[in-house]
Picture 1 (cartoon, rainbow, N blue to C red):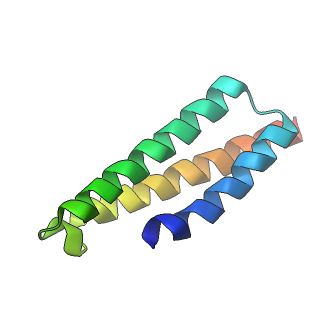
Picture 2: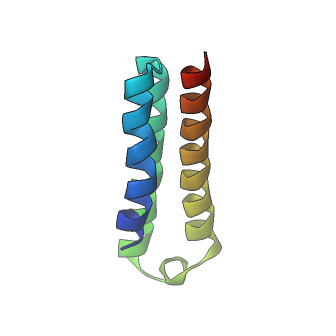
Length: 82
């Protein structure tokens, strides 16, 4: 459920980034980085144990994904303004 909740706030800026002309390499880097973070987050959750119960590793990964989304929003805003 956590991955689904994190998807919508990332997809909208990604589509907007495509529309305003963010460089393909920049956009691809941010998208792949976000995907990698979400896959590691999922692997830790599926592995179980203390980390899967909401440990600090999952929190760090969740915040990292949010920071990548924030970076995408900033890049998109910059491209739209220029």
